[in-house]
Image (cartoon, rainbow, N blue to C red):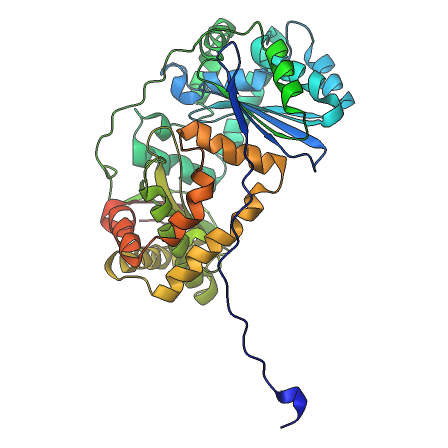
Length: 438
């Protein structure tokens, strides 16, 4: 045998590396705003993310879209600057400043350079505490939002997403309604109602701010105290519906939404999820990773994409919320194979509920989840997001330190139990938007 043909022993596989989770400083400003500050001196950037419990769950039931409009209008003029002046100032600073509204929180994010941190904090405080809601901007944003809704309803995938949320949670639950509102609500809400919603819900007590990046901790605290000094008060608590049935009313059934001349069918299979604060969240994450967490290696993707060639991707995910969220599997296939794709997805879900996963498949899933964690703490934006998750859901401060061990402790029995409780075909509703769906 020539020397070149000698095979070396395969390297042994060690334990996945632990993530480098920053140790943030935590404190509360004199006005009640909680601050989580993680210094990352090696990157000359600072991300500030201010989250206020003023999402769509807090808006009046008869005015869906109020929270989203208020969020859009934060950057469209303040008591001190017009929208044009504000945008010009942000551009001059080389910064980014934007707002986003979900079901639970309204968030404003500023991405700044170290040198412009103080002025950037002042701008962030200005849009949060002193928006002016100019009449012309209110009408412009209202019309843009209505146009966006019309465009959204032209996309079968969007229609499928909205319908499955309604089927899982119902119209009386905020998660069953789009966080961006409805055409009727957006058209009807008045400027005075927007101003009132902002005055009632944009308050520091109950909100939190995450800072990650290049700053001096003491200086940051002084800047925040000064910028938010005049902002006081506490918003009324948001009332979520009490937990009802553990499965959707249409569980086990198909909800067909006809769509003439559609080339593809949009498929959603969904049910009730897991409380974000429950130990089952991590077990559910592992179970979901095996089923559909990866469009290549997950069982749904391996079947529908790699084996059948029916789709570009098939995924599934749990959604987190202040109230218990949902779980959804989704894909899009040619109309000719719609029924087959739904059956294959249900077959994979049933197989997970009835058969324990192989130890090798389980180990690969656990290792993949742990190995991906260090990449989730590389940038200030990622760190702000991960630390914000702890604050949003009241998770322990050492949650991310303990996460790898929690993932590695998940067993095949855990996965099968979660699959029985969350993935079994009898516990989920199927929504298909397409042509000729029966």
